[in-house]
Length: 337
Image 1 (cartoon, rainbow, N blue to C red):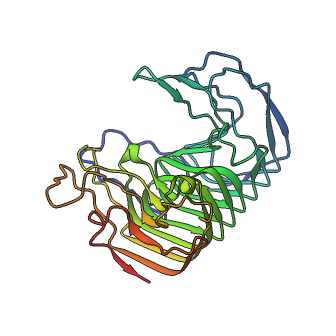
Image 2 (cartoon, rainbow, N blue to C red):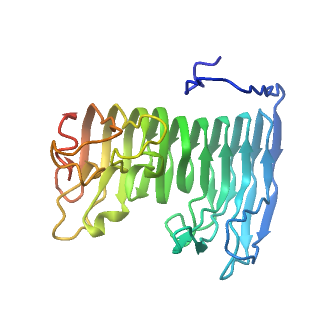
């Protein structure tokens, strides 16, 4: 077993094992200009699968272009033009993709909800790298959904990419973003291992958002180096490096963690466009607004970060980086500056 892709869960009982051999010969797909004529179907969760499905290992996609035309007032979402599933060692380089228009449907609560729709979809795949890739539309235009979604992957890498989002929906073990620019949906993740963000510009509500729908859990470490953070939320008076929420009242089926150690070196926070009541940037968002003193009891305790190391973190506002609006929740975090 490869130590870089460890088994990350313990199972009380194994009922089935599927062995998928890794192809030894490399398959290279070069060039190709594709245009999707967008569907005009009802805006419901009936995902369209139009594109390239990669289900074997050792594949390189180089120089592909995918564009979209004809998006109207309604449409069904897409599952990913490049769809990578149950394989390993896939590299997509020098490729231009397109974010899909966001459509709304009526959710289970009877209110409108936005539907996720993707040009990149990665599921149960290992060692996946996107190099020097970009998208045709504005990465900061919220009319288009974040371009990428993934589930149950290990070792995901963006290198030299300009995309609207990185997303590990149901979890990733180890991820790296370097030499890249991410747009309005920023970085969304849960998972384990080491998450490295370096030499990159990140926009979004937070620098890294820990997805609350899976307990805002990351069992491992964050390393952030030589980055620029442009918080979308600063106009409303907040700028948090690590976002998420967990009230400790829901059983997600696993213990939920914050990164045990967070190292942040050479970070510029672009927060000059702030209102008068702005108190400055914070390391952590207010993950649990009800936890304000010792009377609050978590049924399922959320394991808080132990240590944060800060080196050369500056804010355009001139204000100092605070720990959190919730000083009680993060009272035991050691911050070394």
